[in-house]
Length: 240
Length: 103
Image 1: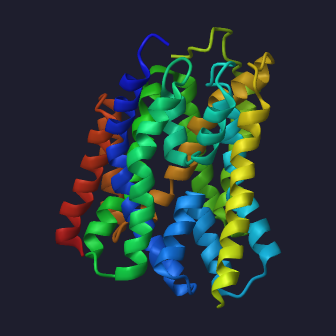
Image 2 (image 1 turned 135 degrees about the horizontal axis):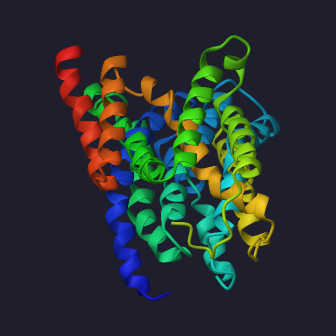
């Protein structure tokens, strides 16, 4: 690690600003769902502090509101969040083998689509302090958004919520498009992934598959096929 | 709904979610040598993020037109090398401005 932990932490803080804004918007609607499930404001915030997963929390609130049992909720979380298992595997290869267990336990707690996407996009080994910088802003954004959503319901103007919700997708594009510009393989993968995802969300039968399962299924199929057809040239850990 | 029950539900959700996230990260301590697995894990983020972005972005806003505009503007800005922050904020702004007229 040539650059210091503090430098990486500051970079993380800077990249954490759009994450925090996007999280605030998404978790605001999550807070409304929590309220509908009979959660108090404190309980909704606690859920967001402990779980940090939009789909998982939404699914949980919906099931609890419908009177589901603990086991059903556990299975639902397993399905809704299974993609994090893949992300965790991928992230394990971005960590220097001598990264301590403490860092691994904290990073694991905060594997979200956004923290993960930005963390793996860094060339070379990941300095955990970069991710901690993002969490410093994103974590409170997520928890406070849920809290306020639960308390204030629909006070925030719809057009502001609509505008903010697109921010997270903007971030995803900023992560996948620049490498796609440099590599035809990645560009092709991105296009195929989007087309397949669209087909799965619109075609009969396929569209009944939950979005969590769809993400895992397509990731395994498409990334798996790409790994066999276009194995990455042996390099060091630095892929960029 | 009783409050004690709610905390039990929160606990179960948190435990299941944490185990999924933390087990690979703590159990896979070494660099994987197998080339196919390495390639697979290298491609995972691009495929996953692309699958999650589209078509979900189309349902994220109040109008399909503002959503398409955000998608196209986002791709063009990212292609031209704008920073993450700029891509995210400008995508939001295009939605906000368009929805002043559309909705």
